Amino acid sequence: MNRQTSSQPPGGRVLLIEDEQNIATAIAFILQREGWRVSTHGDGTTALAAVERHRPDVVVLDVMLPGKSGFDVLGGIRAGARPDLPVLMLTAKGQTKDRERAEALGASRFMTKPFSNRELVDAVRVLAGSAAPPDPV
Amino acid sequence: MTRHVPTGSRIRERRLSLSVKQTDLAARAGISPSYLNLIEHNRRAIGGGLLTRLAEALDVDRAALAEDGDAALVAAVEAAGAARGIAPRALEDAGDLARRFPEWGRVIAAQAEAMAAQARTIEAMADRLSHDPTLADAMHELLSTVSVVRSTASILAQTPGIDRNWLGRFHANLDADSRRLADGAEAMVALFDRQASRGADHLLPSEAVSRFLDAHGHRFDALETNGPAAIPDLVAGIDDPAARAMAAEVLARDAEDAARLPVAAVLAATEPDDLIAAAGGDMALVLRRMGIVDPGRGLVVADASGALVRRKPVAGFALPVVGAGCPLWPVFAALGQPGRPVATTVETPDGAQWRAHAVAAPLAPQTFGGMAVMRATMLLTRVGMQGAADPVGPGCRVCPREGCAARREPSVLSGRGS
Image (spheres, rainbow over the protein chains, first blue to last red):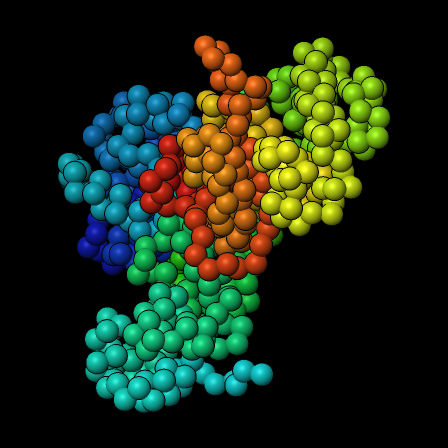
């Protein structure tokens, strides 16, 4: 399930949790082009384990995932060992109730599809700048 | 026939004919002389905003510099990017994309056109979206696919010298996602068809009346020949009593209009002014009759609150089925100056131009001390390019125009609508 797609630093680590392969490919390419090390994960059920394993600086999290929804995953992150981990949520629905739910669960940022590549890259950069460093492995 | 001369060569010819130095032209266009030199020797593709700036600097029409066929494709790709909010600097890559990958350029342009068409349908369903999980799922699929296509197309446009493996991969993804987009659009249309065939049980009376009028093209020949006597039979098929009564009121007014301005006279007229005398100076009557009799014209009637009480759509000019229209429509300007006719040319976001005639008048004869109930009427007629025109849209929710001072809510097309 995991597809390690890291390249050279220095932008920090991004974990992209997105089940749609083509959008994951595009987002990973965009972020890697900017110097980020990107790992992708496509399943909600094992997403929290992936967060533990990859120890990212920023998580980009889709709402619609197989197994568990992005909301469930976000709740798990906030209740886990790194509650301050920046999480950028993506959804195609963009409805007020989705945004409100994401905010209530502690999403750092919420973006609706379709978004521009630049908008996404800028959001990740801003979130990474506000992140507390992960504990040493 | 236009010469098949590359764009760069045309720029060079024009510059030399004006005795302008390469450095001066480069400065005016905001690029380096060396880059201009590459363009002039056709070693760099050009299009989009840069071509426009060079054309302005050379005091020549942009089309005169573009190669045959390029300009339309570049403009279409550029418009697709602009509609999706690509940064102005990135828009200049449209020419490069269209030149290097013309087939993909056509795919992007076709998809943008398809999305604009879908937008008109989305407006009708947007208010019900949150109540219809099937529709919401279909929208989710469509927006997800649009997102992939947009990101992938941007990568291709903005990553010069992209690795061949990545290039092949993105081309394959774009191919797959464009098919998926087509399938998603087809599924959406099928959903709407099913919604339409479910009957009028879930509609408000005003929606049921709109559907009834639209189904008949707003024109009832029986009213023209038999007058109000034809109304009971015409509305008998409307189940909801409230909607049936509303429809009967609308048709009664149409029958009265038909008696005052017979169809033969309307068909013989070209411009509203041709009928003013026959209508006894009632300009609103002229506009209503021309709008209803001619299937090639659109008609909008608004009350003083801005609510659209009659909307006869016409191909190419989207009218929202529910909700408000565009505040820039001349029909609303007419409301602010009752009795004064407004005639102006407007341009829809797809670049089409329309002649709009509008006037506001009391619904019934006024009395001293009585309250005037005003109605504004607008007739829409498609025209060729007339030069400058007032920009209008189909209503904020499905309007792609950015930076519009009249915008009151974000567009579902851009997600922003600044």
